[in-house]
Length: 265
Image (tube, rainbow, N blue to C red; front, side, top):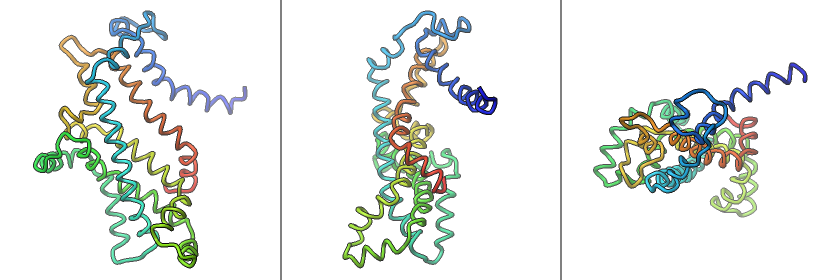
């Protein structure tokens, strides 16, 4: 094996090590985890996964998270697509300043908006709903989606728009049937990042929910007790939180590659 190819292999193994360790821990008991170091489970058990799939508070945490993350992704893309088109095709007073201001929203920490969102949603009856978390995450994901999509749209020649209008296309028909397929790589990249940011965000999701829409990240705090953490159960829950992200990556993997090559990601 060439030394030049050995470096990336070692790097990949280094990145996969925490994931392997998490998976191995999920098949161990807490006593075995705390008892000593072992590369493989000495007492292989499925009790941790059984506890998650048989306890409604656990599996509903995953369902709640998937619901508000999917809802946020759809809302973010629906709002970002026309906004990005406007920034890429038109010039208006303050357009560059507005574009930069959108991006600064992504730079603000979620803790800054937790209390305002909590008070607002409590007063209008949105507290502890999937829509509340989805809308809160839009504050960060829509600017990011606009920024990504604008880069792809600017790479599409304006002659495409003009040709479609000459052929008698209305704007909605042109935008949906011609323009969006032309930037499908950008849509895939934007959808991926919206999904990922919403999936891993904890502070707003935990603050704006209580019971009905409680996310899995908040449910995982239940593993703490007076006797310590249920490490095996926590590891199994961690493994299951990786799966939705892996599925999303699988379906948009080709678009992500094009996005890194062509877009502003």
